[in-house]
Length: 81
Image (cartoon, rainbow, N blue to C red):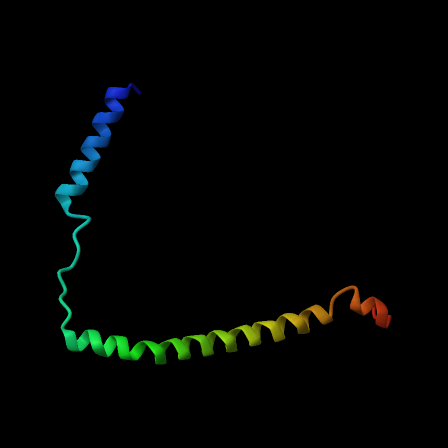
């Protein structure tokens, strides 16, 4: 393709996206009370999220270690090849 054709295709694609309104955002307003309640809820949500992540990590590590103990080289030392 020539440079002019590439530029024309790019301009046409950009115009199409702008006309169809792909990049339009919702005009949602938030009241001060909603803002304050959202800010107040953040510490509780953060603690709950971190707690669930810690639990998932502990579960994964327990499963991973249990699987690893059944595999080589640890079984070689026990004579269970």
